[in-house]
Amino acid sequence: MNIKRAKQEIKDTVQAYLLKDDEGEYVIPSIRQRPVLLMGPPGVGKTQIMEQAARECGIGLVAYTITHHTRQSAVGLPFIEKKQYGGREYTVTEYTMSEIVASIYDRIEETGLKEGILFIDEINCVSETLAPAMLQFLQCKTFGSHKIPEGWIIAAAGNPPEYNKSVREFDVVTLDRIKKILVEPDLGVWKEYARKEHIHPAVISYLGIRESYFCRIETTVDGKLFATPRGWEDLSQLIQVYERLGKKADREVIFQYIQHPKIAKDFANYLELYYKYQDEYQVEQILEGVIRESLCGQVARAAFDERLSVEGLLLAKLSEGFGQLFTEYQVMELVMGQLKAFQQEEQKEDSAAAFLKLAEGFEEERLLEKKRGLLGRQEDKVRRLAAVRLEGMAGLLRSSGLTDKAEAWQCLRERFMEDSDRYEEQKEQWGRRLEYAFDFMEAAFGSGQELVIFVTELNTSQVCIWFLEQYECERYFRYNKELLFEEEEREIGKVLER
Image 1 (tube, helix red, strand yellow):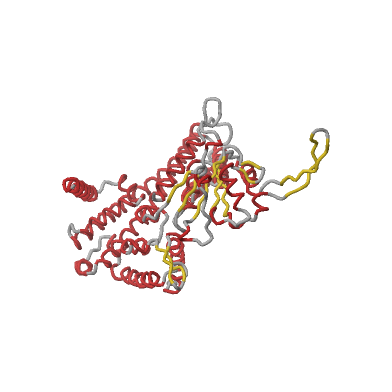
Image 2 (cartoon, one colour):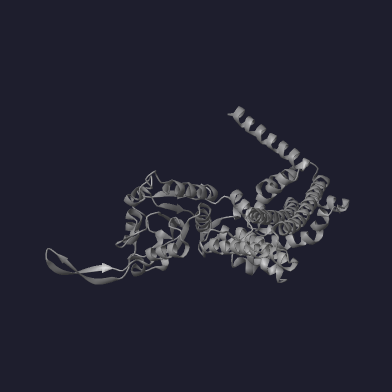
């Protein structure tokens, strides 16, 4: 299955394993809660989805790469203890608590989350001395003599033998006690994630043209040659930072991330062309309504790769703007929630002081949620921006000297409405830019396949879909309906052919 489906399977497993009956006992007892084992190529996102699943389920996460551990750190150190058996005293060897089990208890103390996931990466690459302990861990949920705390689910990940020489095969006895999920790379699913995480548009559009280069691992006489989803994501971040520094990533730099000479060279050439198209086609002007006939003719006569690159530039700018608007919408939703809470409180003290206390409480809650690992990067950003805005409102009340709650509420309401008006203006502005993008696409390509691809790409972006729910774009809905009709027609044709 693809990584998106695998993530949903993990979340479903967590919900099933942590479901309790009327007596407060887990419906599936701990002994029947099979560890989840993710198997798939390196860099496909196994670790990331485990973090996301824990965060979205509101539980803790302790993650270890087991290849970094010795038998002593995983199982514990031996010590001598004296015990009485049958009236006689004996010396007995016992073990200190495993570092891994201890870290779970530490996590519970730090966050207050009593349920969670213990994630062990590269589990099938352990050393020979640690292998028996890993089998015991999967089968009995213990490290040495210490059990994993109740309410903590075991998950593990590994690479198939073709990707790693150090891999150890699990026997049938072990495999019969785990829940095995095979993960395969899927570019369509990754592109959804890529737009959400603001992966560089050149990477997204390039992989749209060279889909086979998304995840490729080859064994040659010169060793392993590979390009992985993780490599593309890390390269994307470097390119974005380089652009801010006024630098460009050349073939040698790209090869440091995409360790496949042919793919690295091809992408380096594409990146040069991408920057060239960025200068030539002046996407910013197109989105402001400056659509020159000569430019439309130029792109219409261009090669397919170039046409897709120009589409990628348009989509990147639209996605960036829609993303900023979506962030503002989320911030306003949080601020509005705090304003409602303030309005419903009884006035027991100075209104400015009361609102400041509310704003400080909001920030404290954000820091706690971040410490627990329950906030993703975007969620944390939104809450930080909301906290800053609430603090600014508290400062406004202090400087205005308003102590009466009704007057304070009116002041806050006016401030919020100013932000709301600004948001509506921005929404209308980006609506016009979307219309100009459609004007350009129609002028350059008519109703050809490029327009179909453009609408399809809009449908793969979370922020684009959100914006199109807020802003009624007649042409988007018309072309989207035609696209769905064509897909249905193809499916009916396949049925008739069979």
